[in-house]
Figure (cartoon, rainbow, N blue to C red):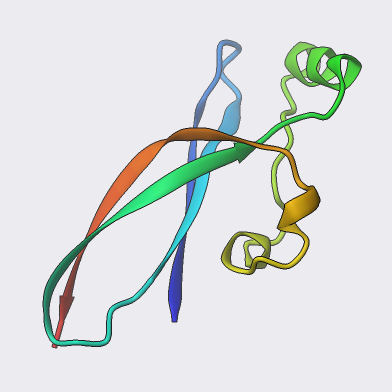
Length: 92
């Protein structure tokens, strides 16, 4: 099993935009586990698309969270690294 994290926040115009996506496998062994997730955000492919998305306030985002958890089809997606999120698990 995996946990998919989607982080949203306001942009300059006050619209909620995606700040990052990430996924991590849930540990099976009992105990306390700390995992750091590298976050990424999709990017537009052309300068015109970048300008249009900035002007309209609609940035690229994934519609299906399965895209983040699976590797299939991600090799053709342009993404940019966007920081880290740390998650703590308590597995019984």
